[in-house]
Length: 552
Image 1 (cartoon, rainbow, N blue to C red):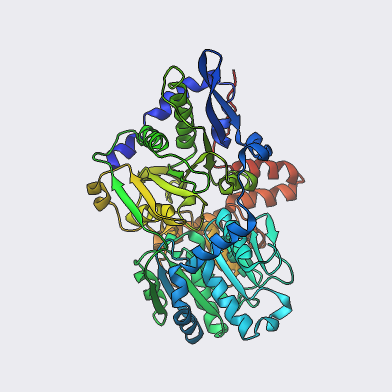
Image 2 (cartoon, rainbow, N blue to C red):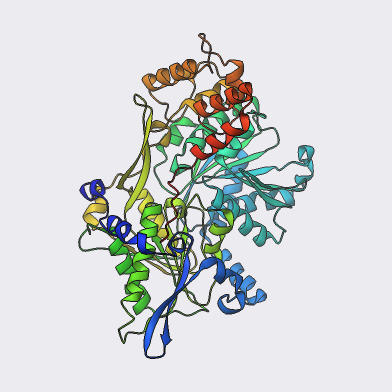
């Protein structure tokens, strides 16, 4: 798989060569509805943008009756494995400052754990003690779409309007109020909150969900919480993980109580390819049509498909190849049902990402990166196609350059992907690699804090008066050479003094959610009176993808 990853899928270059002739290439990014229509004597492929489809709800939506939907949801919630351990969970949380909960994907930990704590507090009437009417329970998610989706699900389960008792806070979007008692937020958002409230005074329960992903923000947040525990012994910290590889958390919190919640809501049948294809995008397209042509679709019991790819180029190529495959049926007697392709990529707007949660009359194929691995439950997904690869960002501290590398995913990630098929019923996962390749995969991903630019992290820690960076306790601390090089770079651009302390510019720069050199650029622009022009340039630099509009 490493050899294939080093070359990449060949279909991307082939599609790039053809794409210049397309007038409607944008639909392959945003999603579209595709079908074969009968035009007098022959068939013809028709595509409609997903945005137009959403507008025409009378034709393509198929909402179930509210009472039937609620009854079905309650029955599925009652079967979640975590609910049978409710008493055990509450005892562990009550008696320990730190609780580590290990539960499989589909056990209900993400949605039910905050509700278990909330109902316990409600029964003991402790919610009225909330200081300044702020939330008592906060649950972090690694991604914005996950925080919004889980908040919506929990508010529906409890029968509350989103933004009142249950809400969320992500960058540029805050849907909370004075009455909010359960708040979902990204871990990066909570780190930013720590800069103004280092002891998390408004929270009594902090849940770090999907901790096994080992994102930079979650690792940094856990290091700050370890300090907070000393100053605020009443704080309850709950760490949840979907994998059994929790040794790093146990070593960091040696007094933590560990709970293993076995089982998942529904089984998933996993099959492997007899060989590992050189072009996983073309193989994914073939597998999509194998499912779509051979498995009939029932709108009352949807059997949608989730395809995992590695990035925007893969998704664009996949969608284009599906379009071409449909065209190959124009002169064929084979009958093929309409299909809706919905991409989900991190750079899409909240509105565009929300399309994956909508239910349509026809089969839906969600094409996603690893953003859909955790916390996102898409109703109707029964089949998962796993390409077996992922793109990871790696940072060279000597050259100060980030590189996006294609490599095989880990066993943990592959298991997470398979678990997406078993959220709403018996599921099936097709892995586009052999079982031998799966056994050769790494067990878990390398912590991202060890392979990323740590200059922003140092600014945040120094702003929180953590002066000795080299001795600050972290789950996995970057090596001393990388720390020293990062400190020198910050000194070089004027954010640190010769004593290693924050300058005035450094204190301002630590509050900007951009790279330190970009923060310094903005501050210099303010000084020279060209702030607006500088902000436009810095905003453009924050875009991680190349934006290209294709036309004739």
